[in-house]
Structure formats: C-alpha cells, structure tokens
Length: 301
Ligand code: MG
Image 1 (cartoon, helix red, strand yellow):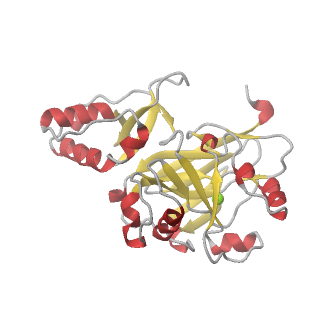
Image 2 (cartoon, helix red, strand yellow):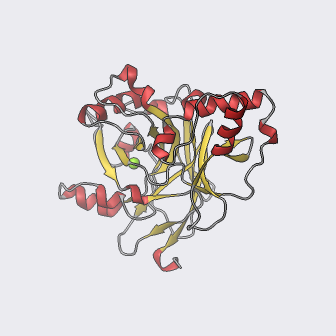
C-alpha cells in the first residue's frame, strides 16, 4: 500500500488528511476504512494521531485488498486535485546516518566508518514534494543527498537484526540537504552536524510511504538523484555499509525507537551543490519520485 498525507485544497490552513494512493487516485483513508468496516467489521479505525496510524498500515492494506477484490474500490470517489504533504509532515525524529556508502565516504576524503555515524536532523526541516528548498544566504555550498528513508511504526528497544524489520511501517525518500561548508567547519571543530543539516526546508520527504509487503527486499533498490534531468547519483541500496536491520538494531541499543522515527540511511557518491532554479529529483521506482525546486531566500514571498 502507498500511504500519503494530503490537503483537499492548496492552503496551509487546511487540515492534513491520511490517504491511500491507488492506481493514480488519492482515496481518503477514513473512507476506505468506513466502507471496509461496513462490508466486514474488523475493528479497524483511523486514529487522529498520525504516529498511531503508522502501526496500523498493514491492516489498512488488507482492507484495501478486500475492497479491490470485491470491486468496490472503483466506486469510491477519489479526492480531486489534492495537494500532497510529506507522508510524515513532522517526524518524531530524523536519525541520519553518515558515510553509509563507501564511495561517498571516499569522495569526502573519509575512511569507511567501523560503526554507524549517527546524527540528528531537525524534524522541522521536512517539506512536501513540490515545495521549494530555500538556500539560506551566506552559508556557502548547500548539497543534495538522495537517500532511502525508513519509517518506524512500532516501538522497539534492544531489538535484534532478525527482529528489526518488524518495526518498519514503510519506506520513503528523503533529500538530506546539507550546508556542506558549514558542516565541514563544524567537523574541523569537532562540533555536531545538527545545524548544517537542519535549516528550514532541508528535509524534502516523500512522495509516499510504501509498506514493506510491496518492498520485500529494501536492500536491493536502485536509487537515483537527478538535477535538471541530469543524473548525479545512482546506486543500489545493497551497497550500504550498514544494512537497515543493522542500523535499527544499533540505534535501538541506545534508545527505544518510536513510531514516527525516520532513519535517513545515508547517501551514495555524487553529491554536489544546489543552485537557485534547480529542480532536484530523488527516485526509487518502487516508491516514486520526490521532486523539489530550489530557490534563494530572496525569492521567498
Ligand atoms: Mg545524508
């Protein structure tokens, strides 16, 4: 199932609603669940809390398949002309993994890490597909970083690698936009990466959250990032130094992972600065394309 969040009108005052992408149509999740419950009650409901919704995606997916089999899905009215939000507009946390592809570590002049490098990125950096990445003035180079993002749906502490994927609500894409010059200065002073990763708009996320039943092997996905239709990054998630189960197990030894946590699994080689006027696209065929324009702060109105 492809889970989305959307607004019925392009107005930030409008509420963000949970939905399902099905054959190019956006169906309101509440309607899918109401019809499924009317057909065969299973005790499904849609909580107001989006993090609580994440734990129930498998149940919604089964309801969706039942409606499809009963040929009822086509009779549900889709929402017309929706505006997509990020599938998780305010993650609980964004946990970034640094240098998780050997070629990227190399291009930055670093050795491959012997254990995961973990940093935090502000949840408030998240923007929706289509929203502009805003380049702050006087910070030097700002780079794109296309990444597979893992969204946690079930809490877990001290989980083993074998158990790890049972915590996953689904997979989406993140552009871990980074004020590179500022990050390099921070590293030189042994300061954290947080500020250079956390400017407003530096966390494009989406376009949808794909449940694990549709991505049985997250370690075999081709990730591509292009700028103005020119491919800049291309790699397979099999090249990760630390696999998704290894990252989940590692993080959960330090703190309990919680619903709404997003793990940005690291970027492959090919990173480069963004310029005002660029269109940047992150793509994994099984998930979709996350497209964002780039503007300067003086162009914000
Ligand atoms: Mg990154």
